[in-house]
Image (cartoon, rainbow, N blue to C red):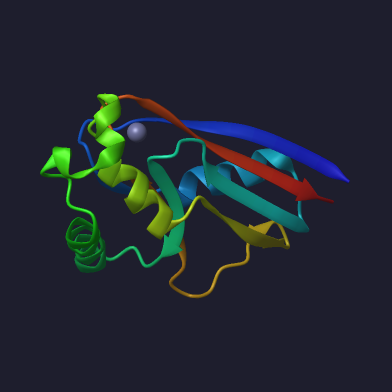
Length: 139
Ligand code: ZN
């Protein structure tokens, strides 16, 4: 069995953003040389998510509005977590809703997606360098 590991780095200039990272994961898969197996992609930070859904701008805005309703960034003093001196209590909660990461089947050297499935990196507390792990195992 082969194994491949790569870290994708992000330095998002905004507090929150949603980025289609499918081409980066496909490039990692190509470099791995793996044709049949599994591809894990996960955020390596507790204030960011990796999820799969449609690359459609309305939906992305809907996610952001919905997450802001569930866990508004302001007022920051609303969150007990922020008593530590941080201001990212909302980002921890948003990450929990959107998840840590995804696993995609690899078939014939390609990510075995449904028609509209794309992999996204969701940043909830940006303006600093953060990482995503790509781990691919198989033959
Ligand atoms: Zn925090």
